[in-house]
Structure formats: C-alpha cells, structure tokens
Length: 106
Image (cartoon, rainbow, N blue to C red; front, side, top):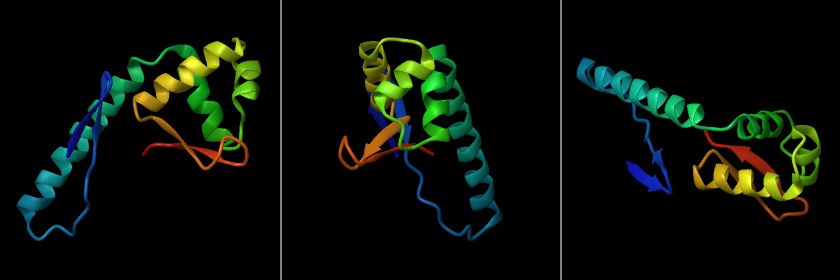
C-alpha cells in the first residue's frame, strides 16, 4: 500500500509466507523498490536532518533541546527539522512530550 505524505511516500507491506516461487520473486522485487524509495528519501535529507536521525537512533529519549546542542543549531531550527522528518514518516514521537520517546520508522 502506498500513501503520500507531504513530499514523500510511505510504503506499507504486509508480510505473508510465500506460497510459490512467483510469490518469492514478487517479494524480492518489492523489497528492492522499498530500498530504492528509502534511499531516495534519505538522499534528500539535509546534513542536520541526517544527524538528528542518527542521534535519535542512539538515544530514543533525547530531547529537542539536546538535539539542538548536539547538532549545533537553534532549538527552533531543530523543531523545524523534526517536523519535516515526521512529515516524511522517518521519525515519530511515541507517548507524551515529557516521558515519551522517539521511534525511527523501519
């Protein structure tokens, strides 16, 4: 299933056990397409956005203020970058602003 998210694309796959060789080929093709789409989205990220994703991957509890300090940009710019990453479906916030955590989309 394909959903348009702002300027991006979200692909939802439902994994089933392949029943035949044809199903396995289709599964491999879908995997390759998804890889290419993800690569294109990641290529379009700025250096700051890539750094934010990297930092969230290392610490899901990191705050926007801590991200701003680590990346070396203002808190406002950090918020803008987070909003863009959410819009692209790359990251999402689980739980409340205080006490929640970040999740990177797979």
